[in-house]
Image 1 (cartoon, rainbow, N blue to C red):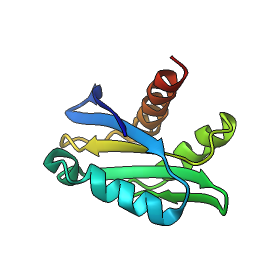
Image 2 (image 1 turned 135 degrees about the horizontal axis):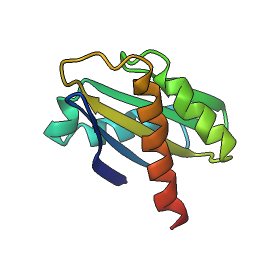
Image 3 (image 1 turned 180 degrees about the vertical axis):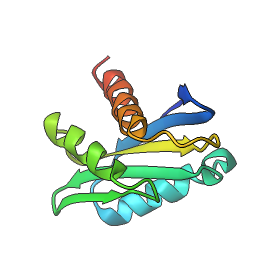
Image 4 (image 1 turned 45 degrees about the vertical axis):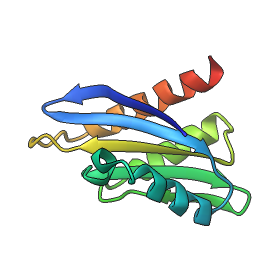
Length: 117
């Protein structure tokens, strides 16, 4: 599991991104449970994720409507299969509007950069 914490801050909201090898929706649930063993991630407002496994795409917005699809599109663009990416947000008290999607994209970009480094 790779975790990049405190990568984006905007109007009080803070973001982290994490990921790792994952082959099935069941493994994705296990991955999220493992991530949430860290109390900081368990208390997050959203743990949004996407995964393209052999049985097809799987996502979970975790209350951040549309964010899972953003992650899936980026996974498709990079042709990254059997690898889950989770974008975590701690809400800072102010609505971010469309900026939240840009932050999800940037978090995924930063994560993917660590894979190619």
